[in-house]
Amino acid sequence: MMETYYYSQFNHAVVHVALFDDVTNSTAIRSRIIQAARILGVDGDTEREAINFAFIDARLISSLLHLQTAIYQALLSEAQGQLRTKTIHSEILWALNPTNNITEAIRRYGVSDASTTLIVIRVDVSNILDVQRRMCDIVQGSMVTFEALKQMTDWSTIKKHYKLDAEPALKEVQGKQDRERAIVNNIIVSSVAMKNVVA
Amino acid sequence: MSPTQQLLQNADLISQGAEAKVYKAYLRQLPTSGQARNAASDSPDHEVLEPVLLKYRFHKQYRHPSLDTSLTRQRIAGESRALMRCMKSGVNVPGIRMVDANEGVLGIEWIEGKSVRQLLPGGAELEDINELEEMDEVDDTDATDALAEYGVSRDALMDMIGVEIAKMHSSDVIHGDLTTSNMMLKKKTRDLVLIDFGLAYYSTLVEDKAVDLYVLERAFASTHPDSEPLFSGVLAAYEKRTGKNWVPIKRRLDDVRLRGRKRSMVG
Image (cartoon, rainbow over all chains, first blue to last red; front, side, top):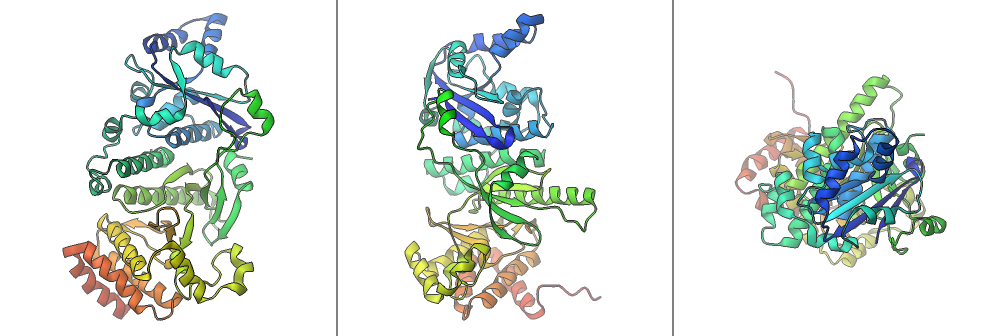
C-alpha cells in the first residue's frame, strides 16, 4: 500500500508515501513534532530522526499527481540549494500552499488536531528497510491505498485556498462534478509546479 | 551534472528549434526488481509512468550569460503564466508538471494525439525529425484517414479551433504563433488542445487579437492548399463564441489583411 518513487537524477533519491485513514492520534503526533525540536543532545537527535517525515492532511490533496508534483519541486529546490524552509519535508508543505507564508503552509497542509486522514512522506538518499513499520509506529490508524484519497479530498476548501470559485473554467462546467474536479486538479497541480517562477 | 541535465540526458529528443529543444521524458523511474523487494513496498509492478514533455531553452552563446539566464527565466515564467491563465478560463491547454527556471526547462503534460497540421491535406510534410523516415509514405489521403480515425469531421475540427481561440482571446491571452502545428487533437478525449505558448502575451487590444487571427489565416493558406473554406469555418465558430466583441475584431482583421501583420509606424 505504501508507494515508493525512485529518482535517479536526484542522487538516486527514494521517496516513500503512505495514506492513513481513521487516524486517532493526530494531536499526539503534532505535539510530538513540536517537542522533538526542543529536546537536546543525543535523545533529541534520535527523536527527531524517529519523526523525520512529512505529515500532510489528506483533505487538501486532490490527487496523487498533486502530491508527486510537490515532491518533485521540493527535490529540485533541495538539489539546487534553494530550500525556502528548513527541511525537504517542510518544503513539500510549502510547495503545496499557494502563498509564500511558511507558517500558513504548515497550519493548512500539516497535521492538525482535527486531522483524521494523513499522508506520510519520507524522502531518503537510499532505500531504508523498515520505513513502513516506522510510519505505522507513529500513526494510529489504518494504512489504505491511494484509491481511497478520492473520498477524502475536501474540494470546496481547496477551491477557497486557490480562489478558484469565480474562474470562468469552473462556471462553464457548473453542475458537472467530475469535469469540475478534473479542472481544479489540473489548475492546482500546475500551480504547484510553477510556484518557484511566480514566487 | 545537475538533476535537470541528467533528466534531459535520459530523454528522447522530439524536435529542435532556434529557441528550444523539445523532449519526451519521465520524471521518475520504476524500481529495478532488486529495489522493489528491499523497500517492502506494495507499489504495483504494473504501474505505468506518465511521460512529460520538456521544453529546454538552451543557453544562447551569443548572449551575455547573465542576460541569457534572466531572459530564459522570464520566458519560462511568461509561458507558465499564459498556460495558467488559459487553464483558468477553460481553454484546453497542457497542464504544467515541472519547472526548473535555473536550467531553462518547462515540463508540461504529454498530449497523445496528432497536430491539426497532420490532420489536414498538405500538412503531412516533415515536421519532426522523427518523421524523416516516414517521408515516402505520406500523402494527402493519410490526413483524411487520420481525421476519420478520430471520428471528427473536418468541419467539426474547424469549429473546435474557432471556439478554443475565442476562449483564449476572451481571457486576453494572445498566442503569438497560431499555426496548425500548434494545435493538437487529443486522442483520448477528442479535445482540441492549443500548444506552444512560448510567444504568448497578455493584451486586451483588438489589434493584437486580429493579428493573431491573421497569422493563423496565413498559416492555413501557406500550409494547406485551398484552405479558404476551412478558415471561414474557424472564423464562423470564433464569431459565434465571441458575440458582440466580434464586430471590432472583424473590422480590424480586414484592415490587417490589407496591410499585413506589422502596423505602419510612419507618422
